Length: 239
Length: 236
Image (tube, rainbow over all chains, first blue to last red; front, side, top):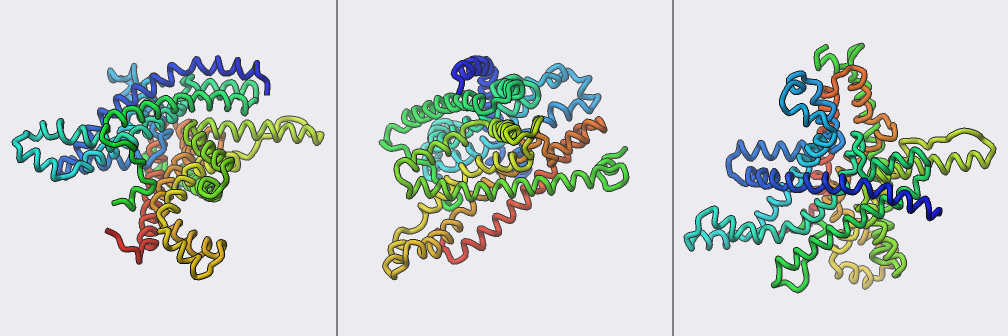
């Protein structure tokens, strides 16, 4: 392998990192907010509200992210009403379309993780808190959130890594993040292996930082456990 | 032209093409999933019973393939494969560029990723087998190979069904990415239709619906398989 080419490629690819981080950070943050709303809708007890959230999750988890990106970026422009609406300056831009698609997509997956976390809090604790006279919102804030968060964190960390990986699809609608630059270099030089090694190293490094961060947070949130329990490999059997 | 006419099977409808594309999606996903099964089993074996070197290599494989974008793997296989093929054909005296088959390179790429996930599933499922059963098999005089065939494989597969269902859904959705190297599966056909009729929303929403149908049917199938596989197992 040619060290000069590797070095030059690596430097070129690094220029895509800020865009990658923007896409990942914005969509994870906005997606988390939407996910909390969806999770609460699923747990609301109102069957209509529950059905809406369930349908949302079904559609966004059952279709490929690339289809969702195309539907938003190319599909919405088909309607003159949208082209004349005030949202058009945003929906015309691949940047905002990718953000929107990533956000809507991660919200569906995260809402199930959050719902699982909330459901994992033993009912007796909520009952006890109610019996002490805490209001519903206080119970949620003091009892449910801290414990549910702890349980949901490993799976949520995994989802953050998956989202970092998913930002690569933004390159298909012309955004030059790391994978976009990589595919451009590959099609110019036909040196797929070298470019792959450099780009792969960048993604693995980002994932490593995220997983370290999550592990640190897990330890912070559970001082009572010495060993952090690993997520079970086959969750359906654990029920 | 109405939506029904556009997606129908009439002379100007795209129904037949989309149906063919759906079959292509099923074919490439199945090929990838099966390849992933073979790879996943080998990697799981390396992680459970292999020596230190095998274990490290298998862990590295799983970490890398689950951490880098699927699109990059598809590009690597397609462009890297084409470059290698061209070099080989030039060495044999041919000229010009030789591209690899989009189906083969795509199925291998998605299969490699699927293998990384399936190795996790198989490893977890193997861990769920009661140790006593392996000891009992040994005690009644089964050889290692016989107990592997009669005790380990059937039970690992049984415990792996729910996880494999999830991995299958991943492979099905990842197959959409193979459209970037030109395989005419659902998404690629929808792009072609969107381009030539200028009705992108109609085509992409149809593509989304086709994926939903495929994932619902196969989700139901895996549920049935789980129910069948789990009969005779007492659950708390």
